[in-house]
Image (cartoon, rainbow, N blue to C red; front, top):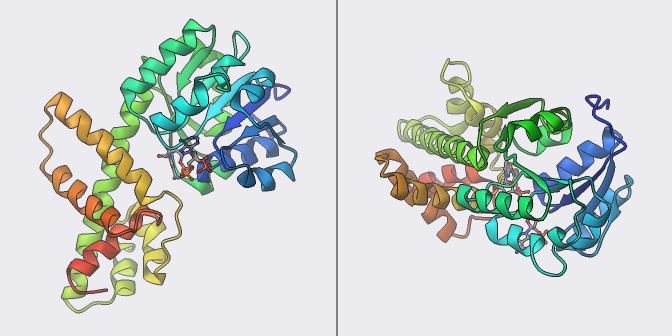
Length: 300
Ligand code: NAP
């Protein structure tokens, strides 16, 4: 795969090799970048090492050789763990190195991370992504960017190798703020799809008939087209885990309180997702919310 023209002699360090981090690393390797990786669980690096990535046993050691450090981890706590302390990457990173955070975290934490990074001479952008594993592997994600416009322009071509749609949204933390708004939308339309599906079952239709019918209407969307056929098969293998979406819904809830937003459907949806997590569905794909609604209706 060709890269965008950004100098791929640069060394990119990817910290966090979960569903997304591994996919970012595979994509960058296929574009000819030098890829260095760290993950708490070393085992997950094995498929990448076969493709030429180099593993480091601490984030600090990885940072010593990286021009760009990418973090893709669960939450703020995980980022703090790999960033700070003696073995943290901030302790090894070279001055002028860029840190981009592709995780979905609290915007306030993102702003704090940016301040700390700048204090130790790093450049930093928040770059959470929209899209899942399939798009990440191809470099076709949507990247939401917050931070200095100058730094953004300097690295725009590199960001285009991560995602073909890169949207600059202004100040530090704005990428993470917009990501929460987008994931609220995602959570709500998965919930509404699930309720319409359960309703169609109550009216006597089977799941396949509902999914095929809705996908022939103008109301089809990402959930009905991408998740619908998997829901028909009962396949909830995670591309984006319910635990991670629920983590985002909790961040959204904090912002609702802070901003005094009045969002009636959101309150109901958060309760439904919370119950699905309590029912031990968290490791599955978030589309398992359909199963939760079906269970409530005695349909599954
Ligand atoms: P994931 O598969 O659950 O991977 C989570 C990663 O975080 C793993 O590398 C895990 O390490 C690491 N981690 C968690 N807690 C840690 C800690 N305390 N210390 C060190 N490392 C820790 O998640 P993912 O789907 O790749 O998502 C990563 C981030 O991107 C999340 O913020 C998610 O919300 C966001 N996101 C995901 C998607 C998606 O479709 N999956 C799309 C957009 C954004 P171990 O391997 O050792 O557990």
